[in-house]
Structures are given as C-alpha cells and as structure tokens.
Amino acid sequence: MRRLLKLGVVTATLLLTSAMPAFAQIEGAVDLEALNVFAMTLYLTFATGLVFLMHAGFSMLEAGMTRQKNAANIIGKNLLTITLGTLTYYVVGWAFMYGDSIGGLIGGSGFLLSNASGGAGELITTEIDFAFQAMFAATAATIVSGAVAERIKFGAYLVVVMVLTGLIYPVVGAWTWGGGWLAGLGFTDFAGSTIVHLTGGAAALVAAAVIGPRIGKFAPRTGRARAIPGHSMPLAALGTLLLFFGWFGFNGGSVLALDGPALGHVIVTTAMAGCAGGLAAALFTRARSGKFDVAMTANGILAGLVGITAGADVVSHLMAVVVGLIAGVLVAVAVAFVDGRGIDDPVGASSVHGACGVLGTLWVGFAHVEDGLLYGGGAGLLAAQAIGVVAVVTWVGATVGGLFLLLRSVGFLRVPAHEEIEGLDVHEHGIPGYPELVHASGVSRTGGEYGFAPRPASAPAPDPVED
Image (tube, rainbow, N blue to C red; front, top):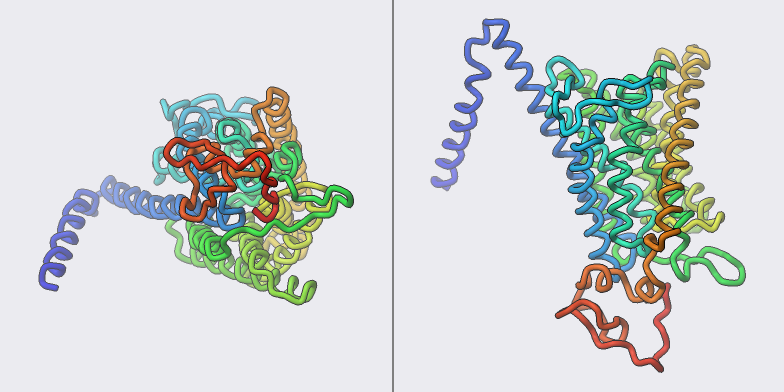
C-alpha cells in the first residue's frame, strides 16, 4: 500500500508539473487563452476516446448477433474500419468535408491536414478537431459492416470503407457541418442523426439489397424470412452498453464548448432517449410475441440514441423520452419491414441507423424548443430537415449502389457459396474465431496450421442456417 501511495503521489506530481506552463502567469491574456485551449483540448481528447470506444461496441454487437463461424471475420472488419477509415479520412476525407468550399458542395483544401485551417472554434485546434471528427467518419462506415455480415469478401469491404470515409461521408459533412448548401437552408443536426447515422444506415440498406441475403435466410418456396440467431447475446449486450457509454462522448463532445448547463442537458437527453428506446422495444416485442426479445431490446436502446442525436441540445427532457419511445417501436417495425422486402440485414443496421436517423432529424423540426412546429415555430425548420433527409438518402443511395454494383459486376463482392456455408473465418483469415469449437467434419482444409480435414464427398452439406 505504501508503494502504491508513493506511486500515486509521484504520478500526480508529474502530471501537475507537465501542466504548469499552461497555468503559469494566468493574469496575462495570452496565458488565459492558452489555459482555455488546454482545457478544450483535454475535454475533446476525452470525448474522442469515448467515441473510439464505440468501435469496440460495434465489434461486440455485430459479433454477438452473427454466427460463431464468422466471429474472426467480424472482428477483422471492425479493426480495419477504424484503422483504414481514419487514415483515409486523414488523406482526403477531412479536406473534402472542411476544406475551402467549392460551391457549397465539397471542400478542396487541407489534404493530409496540410495547411488545414480551422477547428470548430478559436479555442479548438485543427488537430484535436480532426481526431474527434475521424472517429465519426469511421462510425458511419462501420454501420455497413453489420448489414453485409457473413457474405462479403474482406477485400471488397475495405474498398467500401475507403470510399465511405474518403468521399461519401465527407460530402454529406461538407453540405452541413462544413457550412455547405444544406446548412444555408437552415438544416441542423447536432451530432449526426443524418450526417453520421442516416448516411451509414442508407448505405447499409442499399449494400444489403445489392449483395443479396445469406444462404438460408429466406425459405425457397414461400420467401418467408427465417431467423438466423446470433451466437452470443452476452457479447451483443456488452456491445450495446459500450455503445451507450461511448454515446456520451459522441453527443457530449459535440457541444464543442466548456458549457456546463449545455453539456448537462445533452447528457440527460441522451440518457433518457436511450433508456426509453430500450424499454419501448422490450415492451413492444413482449406484446407482439409474448416474449421479451433481448436482441430487439438492444437495438431499441441504440434506436433511441440515434433518435436523439440530431436534437440532443435543443429538445426538452420529456421530448427526448418521447422520441426514444417512438424509436424503440419504430426499429422493431422497420426490421420486420426490411425482412419482408427480401433484404437480409443481420444486425438491423439499416433500421437502427437509417429509419431512426430519419426520425431523429425530423424530430428537431417538431420538437425544437424555439423553432419546432409543436412550439409554434412554423414548418420552416421541419421543411429544411426533410430536404436534408431526402438529399442525403439520394446521394448515399446512388453512390453506394453504384459502388456495390460495380464490385458485383467484376466478381469482387461476395464470397463463394461453399465459403459462406463453412464460414468466413478460416477461408478469409486462416483461423476460426473459436478454434476449440470447430468440428473437423464441418470445415474444409484451408488455412495452414489451422486447416481442418475436408468433409467427405458423400457427407451431406451442413445446414446453412443451423450450422
């Protein structure tokens, strides 16, 4: 204990000593400004870390809601999303989003952060603003991962990550947060119900439609959707709670100011909407099927969080609860609707982020405490929000659809049927996610020292749903 106490004292002394230059001679104006910059940088560094942690949440959620034979593939995609996505955003994405505007459509300066200007305010440096924004860009991309899980080629997914973080998402950001044409119309999106989540959700829906459903998802004769349960609800729940935790940085960091009342309000509305969404989804599934659906409860929490993200700073606590309740029911209805259209989205990404992204964006037009329709503000803000939704869905749908059709046309989109049935872990990565659980009779010899005996030619193929 004495050693631990000594270590704590030494560590605290070093930290205070390193911070002294910022605190010295604070009576001068220059030093006060330096202190303010230091405080803002520390605040955004913490928020950046929370948003970064959301990628661990996406990894666990997606892995838990899919089958064990694809667990390593799921983790691999999420690892490359944050790494490749951040680097791509550094090279071109930031410039397209925040560079000098070209006609209010796209930025044209600041590539590789060279001669990049700005930041969100005079106390926020360009570098810490970039780090914070890069986490958002990667988030928009990783939403697609769950929708195409268990059948996309790993290389094809990497192409999708680069295009999303390097062009598609930055253009949406340039229209809005970058001061482009949508911002000029009065469109507002506090932390990204449309800019991040609808971009990712619309991309996920189009991607899932083009790549096609997993083998066995729909009955051959009737076309009715069949459940393909995820292999670990504990992992899915852990991922959901990590995402909830990270959302306090996602929304809280978007205040972009050391404003106690504003930050407190955003944290409370975020918490209320997420909690209301989970409760609504749980009760709705109980009323519909007689059971409390754990997976849908998890998606309900995320749906409520997506629903509040656009207006966390401008709606009341009560209206945050209301949008969460609506989102929790909407996501359950949307998942069934997507299934009914013959589109296979294993984790419900298009419903959580797409449908509830639309809801959250339009909710600002209804419930903004000053300009919302419900508060006598007229329909002007609601119209601007609707235009933004249509514009983003059109842009994302066209570009992602074109990209996936191109990848499919050259045979670089979907894995072969036998690889999909046996699992992407061994075929794409040379190692199963759970080596001790793999049966020798069910996996072909591919993957070096982790290869397994091939299935005899006379042996029946494993059921693609149950395996």
